[in-house]
Image (cartoon, rainbow, N blue to C red; front, side, top):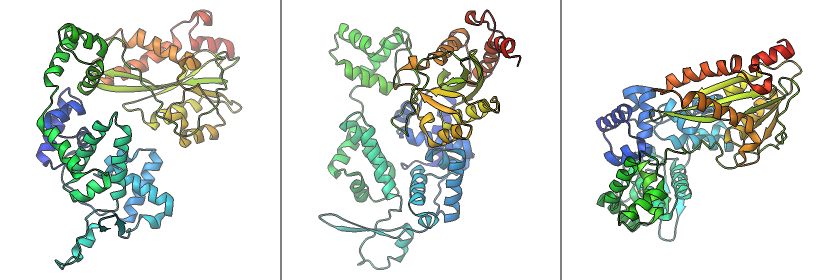
Length: 454
């Protein structure tokens, strides 16, 4: 964390909760990193004022094990777990988990000091408690790096891998180092990050110097507002050129991303694919969306709604026999719990001999071992679309289109809670009242009741 007072954190959190700015824009205004603001907000929401007070803790093996068991039981991320237990260093939870996987409970105990050597010097890395034993001025200086030094290094490496270009990676790495300087000596942070001292101070001077694109950003915002959000970066760039500003469209694209501006005509769809997490299942459905009876073929997916700067995610399950939504779950974030709760609700509809195929896309939720294990326990056969091919899951995509056309785009919602209630009401209407031509003019429930008597 950067050197921010508790009063400053409290003011930033209050501005975020009462205002309309996101983490990126607010961070630029107040001079704090967006990730820090995100953590302050979540800690405050979970723990109140205690989440913003300074805290230095030495964690016992018992506590670490309690944290990990809670994480596994509720299938949380390291960040979510750290927020729940008011742990300021979210990366340390992931470290504990890795140590436990490698050496069991014993690996969660005190870790010995490490020896790191390079061409110029030898540095011993010890725990903070070892610092008390330095009674002699002539004794070699020990670095107050805790056992999470490896996690810091990996955090910096992930920033470099995820950045769009080398310059942005260097800027973000310098920001991380600045945030950690109050806890660790600068030379050793630079060593962990693999950054030269001159590069670090250059990036800091660039950050302090100000934004050379300030005037261009103002012009971009003026054009965007004048067109009421209808223009994307290409048409904004063309408008700038028409006004006599010779600027590359890629610069305009980057600046609009930084400013949080994008065309509202075709809002970006939520994508659940986040790389090859786990193994993908075969496409057993092969676009054969016909079913002879209930609980033979199910399809599922996740869609996103935005209201007043907040998001709501919906995960339904549809039975292809009659197009009925047999179960659904909503959540403020696209976490694993969104699909696992939905699955538990759906499996309650299964008969003793039902063994349905459950088809989805290749989203990360559906590739995790916990989700696959839940399917195996209920003897549900998993099927997945080909990557990037939404037509392989057309029925549920069609339902999302109908839902948004007949509900979301026809009404003005002022809050996520209001939308959530409306979705629940609409799905009941969709199942029980809304007739379909292909179901002989019956609603899904009417068609099922007429055909099966249930």
